[in-house]
Length: 547
Image (cartoon, rainbow, N blue to C red; front, side, top):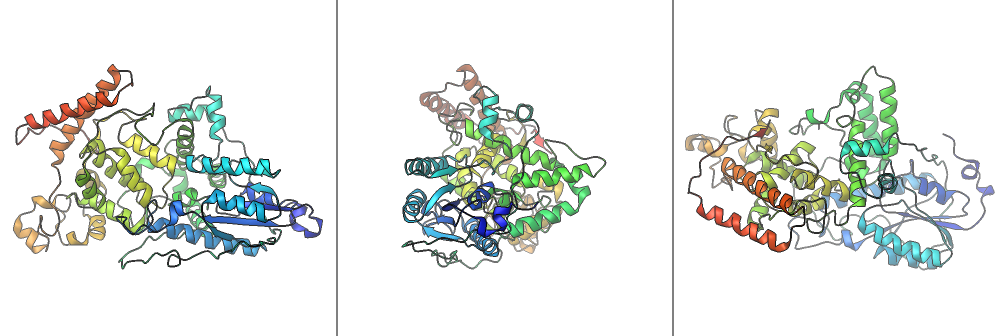
């Protein structure tokens, strides 16, 4: 598409400056806020604010990074910013980086610079909603035009909720019916931008390095293989789309969670999270592929279906108060989860004694990413499958360590996988033994991420505690010394979890969801009493496993 004349001919520009506030949407392609900021302006200030809320080093955190973001995500963001700066320079502009509380920095810039338009991408995340309200209120009072288009998602969540009578749809199928076919035009591709205006007394920074932010990277044998930025996003997109048969036949449940040399997905989620890749552009590209093949899969399992799952969670999250909590969340089952920090730490630090679970958690720490079925396995294990630890605790760890951590999707998935909302078949449990073995009988994934087990025979790789001591010695891995014993016995723990979930569901049904703190305390006491009454070796029952 050709850009409009005003973007090609600087002599035709008139009016004053625009401020383009980047947060997500770290791209030049399909960026309607950036296009509008450039249109008819004599100068454009492309601004990104280093937010201490996310970026300040926390020396007491359990792994390198800030309180809210692990070092992998911070690195990915900085790479994305450097790539955006490079793209803007090709258009005759550059990225202006400042540090501080974003709304305060933004207001200072609006005061200091000659700005008549404030442009930024609309964001449904509660944190950004609060920032945006401050910015919009100030700009409106100062007579500055505000343009904040919806372009991080394909649909406007508010529109879907309005169509549903002011309530978010609570099932994927009802969302699809309400949404229908999307109607959008991709933003005009820029070939030139107005120059940056006079920045006055503002101290403009270059895109900082990790070291400049105070991060000292500890020695690690492996780092995330995923580089941030729009250029890398578009390269990965082209690579995925080049295999039209793979795109057409993609079915989410059939992916291999143990594939790590070449992951069995597009790995475009972190680029969508930061807006390095436009979800609207991705959607259009997939539709173009579908037009040129004889047959293709359909939602919910297709690649388009995966994008629409993202839209579903964004919509429900936007329309549900306290979506990220159990308390005060009307769509969340009230369950008296364990408050066991030792079990949580064992899970987080890959010390559960279940190699499949621990290998996934090592991949999370090292890469900041793992396959969605691997995420399902460890989330189920932590919550309703084995440890019965609160889903909010696991959510917090995923939120910090994942490079594609997304407020709506992360919370939605934890609600789903803990059977707190959306999905209620709590009897279906991912086995920490047989589920991984189905995909990777030799245990190559485990051997890679848990090298202490690299010489363990495949017969024992998923249950090393069952190996004879002679086998353990030969493999140079004594269970209980070199690698931990299981923190729980899966057969026993999963049966106990089912009983607890059944009683919690019954309580929610009896009280029609209006469960009080005292109700939860009573049920918690009952769980404790039942555990005290159990025999030392409870009878093992047949398990219903997801196979």
